Structures are given as C-alpha cells and as structure tokens.
Amino acid sequence: MANLEDQIAWEKECIERGSNAFFAKQDKIKAKGRELTEASRIVVKEKLRELALRIEGQANKARGNTGAYNRLLKSIAGVDNNYMRVGFIGLQTLLILIARGRKLKVTKLVSTIGTKLEADRKSVV
Image (cartoon, rainbow, N blue to C red; front, side):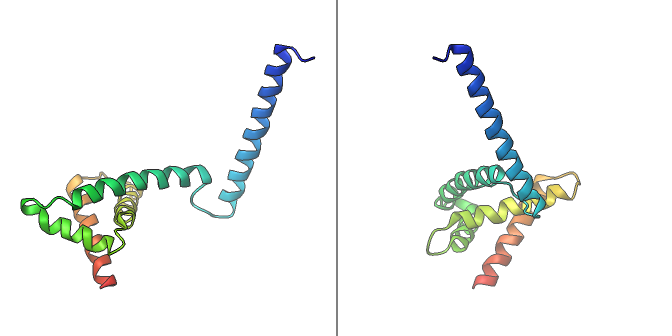
C-alpha cells in the first residue's frame, strides 16, 4: 500500500510528464510557424469575448456626440450582432501599433482603430 510520500512523488511525476508533453506540443506549434499557441489562443478568445460585450454595451448607448460612432459600431457588427468582429479589428490594430515599437498615444490608437473600422464597413457595404 502506498504511503503519503509515494503518492506525492507520483503526483509530481505526473505533473512533470504532463507539463513536458504540453510544452513539447507548444514547441511543435511554434516550429510550424503558427503565431498563437493553444494557451495564447484561449486567452485571446476569452478576452475578445469580454471586449465584445463591452463594445456592444457602448454601441447600445445613444447619447450626444457618440451616437454616430455607436452607429458605426452597430453597422460593423452587422445584423448578426457580431461585436467580436469589431473587437478583433481593434485588438489587431493595437497589436500592430505596439509591434512597431514606437511610443503609443491614445489619440493615435483611437484614430487608427476608427479608420480601420470605417474601411472595414466600406469594404462590406
């Protein structure tokens, strides 16, 4: 019968084998040239859902000067209300600007996202 020390040692070994298998798989994914590993894909997808919910909440507000921007958000989301599309464009723009390695100003970021959203809307319409 196994004692507590044997059980702990066995669990550590299982964790180590599982971790090694996971990281070996991630290395294979990277070697094939994929940009996202499984772990990062899950994180991006979850955060994109959260972002989409926030954008949808904003788009459904129709106050003052933001009404035109909110209509733009709604038109890009389309009849299927796919706010993940809007969030993806924003996230993609943010990552591109960060990758350029320059200092990122909020006004430049927002302006660039707006330009990309408008271009996307025009390409769909």
